[in-house]
Length: 417
Image (cartoon, rainbow, N blue to C red; front, top):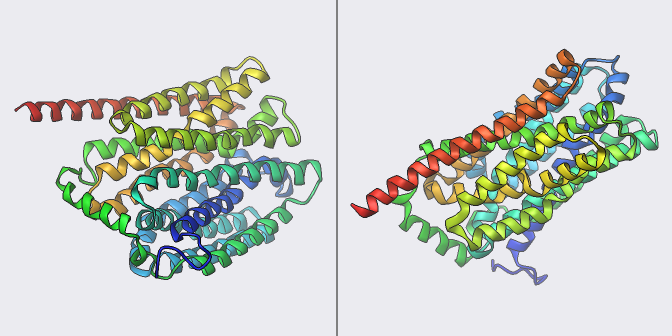
């Protein structure tokens, strides 16, 4: 089958659009509950913050645990089958939460939803690697990633308006999400080819051959450099998922925000991330030799903005720090880190490298929600959690910088020998 279908749209472009929409759907679910935690707590008998934060932690625990197994199954069964099976389980988990009458049932639904989403990352990026021409791959991945920002904005604003302003029962929001997931399941069924990896265009095949020619220069899965990237991604994601799960509650209970303003302020982090991701993905392609410097700069600025979230003396400064974090934080650095991993890992182990990369990143999403709730229960504030996240980002950045500098010096010595 040719790379262009009867509609005249090239298959790789369809892949980019559909995978981006997949992230939209996933992130609508991930963020739709966070602005309405107080309503969920009230309906369940005023459970504490640690217990309510565990809803997100159970989701990410299942998502994280299934990353590597799903990556293996994607290679064996194909992306289409795994996407269809995964989203079917995702839908069941979402409906289970909507029907839940106890916190335990919500936890079970969260586990199902997390397990259902686990196949998406490996499916999405193996599809893009196999079908998108190399010269457009970084931008394509940035577009795919941008779906998460759009979904985050829709989830935060939508649930805030529907539940807080229009007084819709929070359970009904889950039925709306389930309907969106059904639409995505149908889209996967109709658009994704059963054997997508065999449909790679010539440009992608040439790219693979070129990668094999330099494979000896690539680092093993657990080289110091790749391990430093894994840890840096853990630190980067920790701050991001702290924002995703607890920023709405923090704004409401400690900064005096209310109603739709809560979702709007939180969604700014996601919305401004889209142009940041597109801009810096292009920048990393144009200045490949400066990729490490770009990563370090973005991470340092992100840490400062996380700290300013709690140090801001007024609403204006707080909003500026949130906007800058969205523009220069995780969404901006994601495409560059993904590109960096693809350059360092061997072509034969690239899939596993991405699985490990995402596994370490998503591990932070298991820890951050519950730990933040626990700290909040003890101290009565979430501010210290933002400070911890900023310190983590600085620590990860320093370790990555040290390892990258050491590797650069070693390479220079080898070249001069």
